[in-house]
Length: 350
Image (cartoon, rainbow, N blue to C red):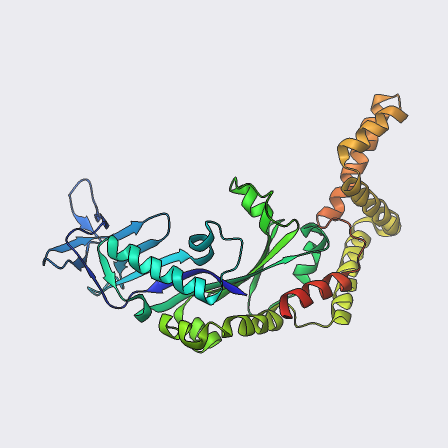
């Protein structure tokens, strides 16, 4: 596990008269001109005061925002966020060691100074910390997809998006996704990266959660012994959250999922439910392995009557859809237990 995106709370900073900050004015009501939600934002080193809804600085490396702390108090907070591997490598695929991460933090501090925001980044607090681990899987991402909903985390909401699985609450997120697919969606050439890369990200969303998980929440602590704890503590967090089951327990959970699917068919088709269940599973795997278009072409070569081809294709799609309503998974030669054991070992062991 290594650092990905971090968000820092700058506790002590000053802003020069030549800063590159953009001040966003407060909104106002057109008819009356009444200003809505305007706050004192900062005073620069020349004594000039600035008001507005927020001030910000966005560059290729970082995003900084100064905004009101509360709606009722004239206090502001300053946050800066950046991706450690993206600054270090130019992309966020590969992990960065402690020495490289420390160099990135120094670069961020230098860019802030050059932009007119002077601060000692070592004195900042960690307001958000994202860590990640890439693994190369033996099967495509889709082969593991139906496994993830079985690995329930306590007091968390689960969401699935085809190539992404997310478990989250207000304090943290566990996200598993197809890294190369995510990069392709951002129009990044993935030919140089390892195939079948699955990414595991753990995101701590506030300072209090960072403190509870790592035992510290300052940048200075991170680079004075804390960095070595990242891997150890993150493996433990993944083990406690999504990989707490034994292989036998996962097999049992899989059988319960299959039982639920059977109950669905029995309720819908009653007397002939198992016949429909077999048809649907057969259609599902035929469409997954061969593809609907390939099946259609084969049917056209075997059956001359177009109406029969249309009906056969419709039967394929209808029965396939019955299974897709219940699960999203491509076929794999491995058992559910074997898939789980592979991920558990690659994520939670050294």
